[in-house]
Amino acid sequence: MELKPAVLAVAVLCLALALPRAALSQSQSAPPPVADTPAPAPAPHHVNLTDLLSLAGPYGTFLSYLVKTDVIRTLQSMANATDSNSGVTVFAPEDSAFAAVDGAALSNLTADQLRDLMLCHALPRYQPLSTFAALAASGGPVPTLAGGVNCAVNVTYAAGRIRVASGWTAAARLVSSVYSTPPAAVYALDRVLLPVGVFPTEPAVAPVPAPAPAPAVRVGDDDASGGAPGAAGRGGEKSLSCRVGAGRGLVGYLALLAFGFVMI
Image 1: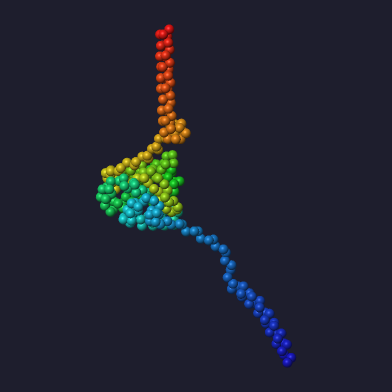
Image 2 (image 1 turned 180 degrees about the vertical axis):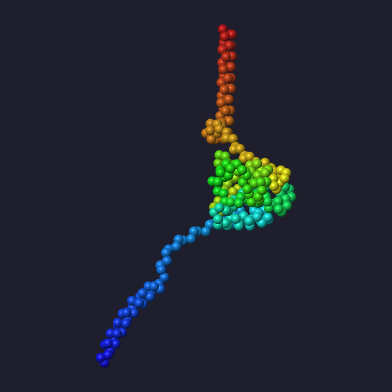
């Protein structure tokens, strides 16, 4: 019975010696704290070019040619780029621009020529509007996806107006920005680009109609009549009749005076 306190004391001593070792073992096996990692950069927004051209405005003819030549897949792939130095810029002629081109000139193109024509309407990089002044100042042709000098475009910039020329198209006006968010931009044109590489001879193109002049505003009649249509005409007739009556009265007075003078 006297050994129990001694055994208890030895057990307590062993436990006291084991606790620091267990704590040390746990501290050595615990992984080091992990530093906070920055959140990943947001992925770029990718636009669906087919939906955009279908819903944004009168670009149905252009879209139909893109689909027919399968160029839409090339443009969409470039519009999905993640590199900030790539992307695509699309020049989309309006339906009225295609209607102005001789139908035979387009229908007689081979499949390869039509594909080159569509590729001529795209630049192999995202170009915001702010860069067109520099493109114009460079003075040189800007390469398109069609490649070659005969399918390049020339950009001019004057008084805030941007024009794109290619081959037989001397001045296609950039009408508006349909979409412009990296890595893709789509701009509307009022003419179809007609590169020499696709059209060896100039196709017939109807001139772009000038805007209708504003109707002339006639000032005076309605204002003088207090706003009542035709009142001014009636006022003029009344004034004329007064002048005629006064003239007749003066003639009668002179005749009477002459008769009295003769009688005298």
